[in-house]
Image 1 (cartoon, rainbow, N blue to C red):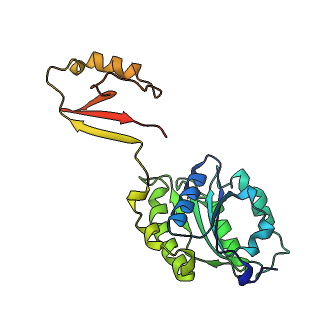
Image 2 (cartoon, rainbow, N blue to C red):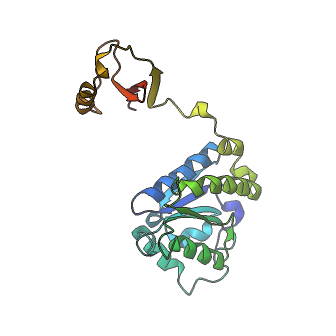
Image 3 (tube, helix red, strand yellow):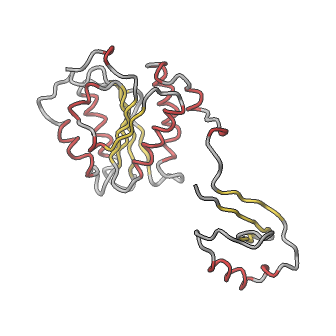
Length: 243
């Protein structure tokens, strides 16, 4: 039996099923954007760390699911899915739950995003209500799965805000992020014109310098760049920082 709405926490749960880490990355992005939008509480969890019997106690859940092989679900989704397919679960078991599903797949395979499609249909058949239509990320897109994730998230936040405005009190920050709060950049690239007589114009020297570079390198001669890169007739100087 689902808890009454007065007992439910104002939180967003993001559950992901990932085999190689892409779905986890996408889920963490969902969580970050929700926090930026002022969501009081956000929990991002692997699907195998969430008890599916507790699903009716939640109000807002986003699922991010990848696809393995010929349409198989990731290992972390298998027990969760087995529970959802129990015949004892009625058509009103998830009544009161608002959900959204985003899948990661490859359209060159016949069962493209099959786990996400199955999950979306099953949740709906158990009485849950869609916040928005499922999103399907495609590895064949020029931007990968993010080509579908970007516009899907915009629709998700707007739809979720219409469902419950108090869940995203700063929705404008989620949709239009303030770059001033993103922290310092880890990489700075400075363009400049190198002197014509610089010795680094010799390709052999440039190659030797490239071979000697290491991500752990911290020291360089004062006044000289840590590395230089020539692209066409232009030189680029770069400085790398670690957090």
